[in-house]
Image (cartoon, rainbow, N blue to C red; front, side, top):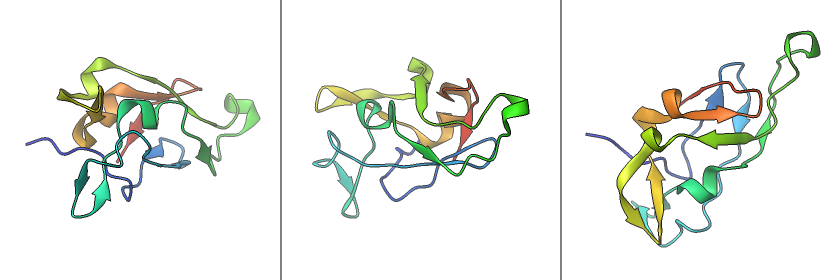
Amino acid sequence: MLHPILEDNEIKCIHGGIVQLKSNLGKSIQDKNIPFILETDLLYSSIIGCPNPPTSGEPCTQVASILPSARGFKKHNEDYAIMQDLVSSGVFSDREVPYGV
């Protein structure tokens, strides 16, 4: 069973930078009072603390793309929830690096 990303989850780029999760569109959809992260909420979210050195392509700074394969099947507030189990193969930074939860 797939689980949506919640605002209190931690998502990191493969270098260890942390995505700043903030639910806007997903605020009204919650699990145990914690808002869902929808595709619009995640796309272009900032990444802090990525240690990728300039010699290896610069640090990751934001979520740049989300493949449809990372989304849930059902729309909420006209948008899709992003599934925890699918992040590593479907969410990429501006350095085209996949993520993990």
